[in-house]
Length: 130
Ligand code: HEC
Image 1: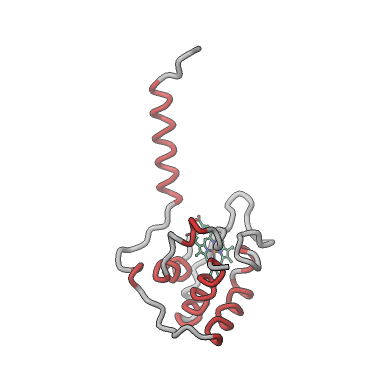
Image 2 (image 1 turned 45 degrees about the horizontal axis):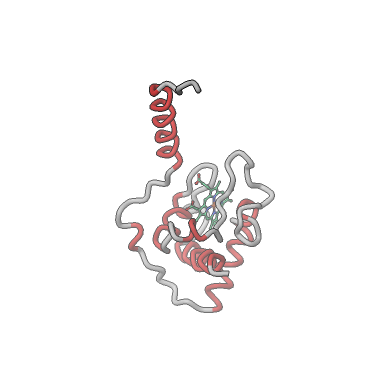
């Protein structure tokens, strides 16, 4: 059996680390502490659902699983129902990600109000619980 040169293994490890760093979201320390100011209600959930249908569903899919018709196969939209994604995203982090976006996902800070984003945060959380 031929031995794989150590230098090749090191190069691959560095390349993997660099690409992981480029793919990561950068969330400022205090963003995760932000709390949804909208009291949970049927009305807030309904509003969140309608924002999701008009702004998110084309990429993330009607059920949030990431299979919307406009999703880029080379850069899939996240599965918002996946427990490993849900656990990464307390409500403050969801708000930050939606507000600021990350290519190819657009930022919504100029398209939606803060209340609309908090409403869709509540709706996204409800998708993760199904
Ligand atoms: C143009 C397609 C597109 C639209 C529209 C879009 N997204 Fe995304 N979204 C993506 C992609 C692609 C990613 C993965 C980004 C990455 O991790 O590189 C993503 C990631 C996310 C994440 C982060 C998941 C994680 O890895 O933690 C959340 C949350 C999210 N989107 C919610 C939304 C919501 C809510 C909306 C609507 C307000 C929306 N997105 C609209 C494409 C889109």
